[in-house]
Image: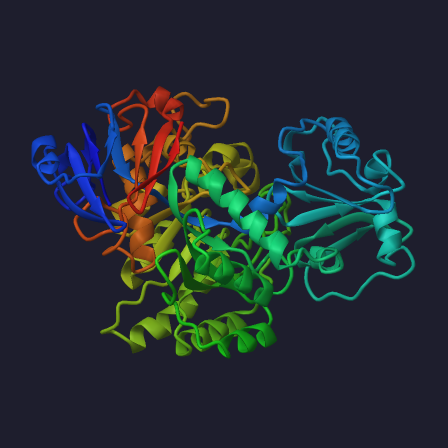
Length: 540
């Protein structure tokens, strides 16, 4: 059976930005595009016809940077994103325990807190969480995922009140008497997460599907996700098995490319035994790029900067890996058929990633190497020029600008801030930009990323004129970043990103014409239909 989408303002996003009325789809692929009359003339008995009702249709959104499994699992945790103070956080956790009848002596988890605007002016600590419960073990993660906090019961359960664990990177905060405060920062948080009960394959599968369904309803038809980072779930073998079982059963709601975060050399070598290469897989599940983390987040001053933090002189942030180790890992992965993508939040991280990529690119001038750097937050004109010279894909989490306006100038000062989050500069230099959300760090709705990059306003709509408005990009550029850019980053431009014959029949119908709506109303645009593989999978 085939499917027809008709009566639409269909922006194909092809090289000519062709606009058509209808699409004919068979066996999950686009067969033809054209006028309603042309496409309806192809109709056969039994074909499904979807009426776009004159609305704007674009290719399905492709989020190039998520933590899908973490988001899916977070749906079972206490939701702390909306807490405006430590007191609210305490009450939220109490209600979560009560509403879910969580037995004493078991673990309580939450995520999403952010102390930036708390009136207390500090992070929570174990004493705050002890006000929630002294009978449960509590662990809560910051919105950026670089800090977790536990209560005293959890520290006792883990044996940390008697003796602190050994760790190589990150920080465990202690008070004046050397007693842990419950704050675990950077990689040190893994000493907590690694000791929590593992989810196992079946719970991993449920979390994956739960996240995919939420993403699908927001118009995402493809994502690239870093899931190995959730050590809470199990080892990477469990996560791979979960995805393979879902894929083989046809139960993945959207298409997934899996980043490979394997920070330890032993993990990296073990993974090579499978023989997977970037791009291997099926129509719905593929092996993505080898992922490397160089430092932490800007919010907690863990991003690695070339110059010191403006609001904490003497502090430069990470990195958590040496240049030698980074270059070695990237080269080793490349020799095993895996391209790399690095997180580059601070300018030092960006510099290190570019320095690691350059020798490989120079040694292989005839190869189309699409190495990537994600986040791309703190940059300079010179660094962006290096992206362009080397052909490195800029993975920009467009929605970040909405949240980071509050902290960027504090952390960086006015001048460095003006050179950061420079999404337009990337376009001006001819770089390919692939958009992501970093969900669950930020809201996964692609419309919000588009709105944030076009207006450069925070969540309260300020400043009205935009934060460094010269770096505002167009709606067209933002939409391409969430479609053609993300597809290009993963060598999928012949299958995804535009509405053309031969490509996957993945598209979304929008409530309004996002290309012509007033920029003040972009955030009000909704996805009303999601089509994946020619099937209507969401209608709202």
